[in-house]
Image (cartoon, rainbow, N blue to C red; front, top):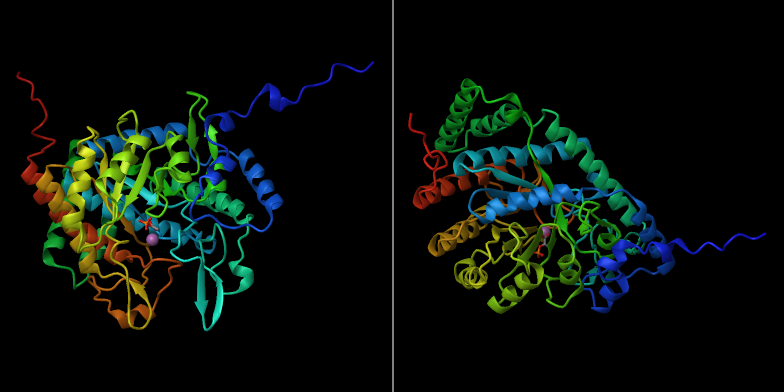
Length: 479
Ligand code: PEP
Ligand code: CO
């Protein structure tokens, strides 16, 4: 006898993700900007369904923990350092590159933490930063026109028709490369590699450079004395040995982000599990667009890039849509106005958000508004101009009484020559030596650490002005 016909499992157990977030077709119907054009829809569907089966790369509870750290940033009790490659590439997923990236970011964080006297929330542009928005769909060289490079998630950098074709199988490689990167990062930050005492020796190496100003050497010595004091007080070893480090990237590709959405078993809520913090780019922040729609449904902390064309009305509508509940730590607003514009363009934006009653993390990206091409054809950025935007950002927040919550920097731990200026006085001709970026020019290791020392001075001034002092804020007990 034939038994009762089994009903399809799909009918019994509707996929919780598809009932919680909009379907991919719905997102594409919004005209999702900056998407690949895949020639083979069946292959794309196969890849997406395969990725839906994979374990999450990060956990919902971790994203929540980062959200509460970002709430501290928004409240002026912490500072954020978000940094890493403009575009990660599959070929650069090596132990040396990952170690160097962590090394420079942790070095910077120590200097900043000492100067700011608040915890530094360390967020990498890492383990997922493989897709790039582009201003033009095509690139022409010597009369040959091919699709633009859109990041290793979409196509290859080589200027050949084969490399530049959009291939959905690359999304699986994004997942695998991100998993391998996170695996090593987790081992490094938990395994004693990131011990404060080790990190400090990297900074002392930097200040030994003869071109570094004496005041930086003095600051490094102060940090050493502070650490000696902590050790003498018996601060437990663990406090030195482990750090929290979070992964972030621009959530650009609908198929990838959708396929990595998971329902948190604790709460039944949807999280993007491709990274802890996901951000919306300057080119994809349309209020009714697919990116804002998708991220409005995910419970991760969310970043929004804001360039000089954003209006107070735009930003008000965006924060209300992405953070309807005024949830602490939900939003990080990453402003990238350009050094020449920040002092005029930023105040109305900050005021518009403050007037909604929200406290958000204000973070300065001094890179993307300050890119130019040299006469010899390199895209570059100048260290003093980068600094000028940071300075303008601090000036504006000092004026408005808001907390300059952090910086967002494109950098690498390697000794590349992509941005001009800094202690090693790189000029436009030296850009030929090691120009290795797949997309935008990055600060190299020394330039990154130098920026941290610069920032340290500025943070100290601001802290003094604000009168925040974590020691004096302690309520002493009478005895
Ligand atoms: C980026 O951060 O690499 C980027 C493309 O930035 P934006 O969206 O601010 O242009
Ligand atoms: Co970039």
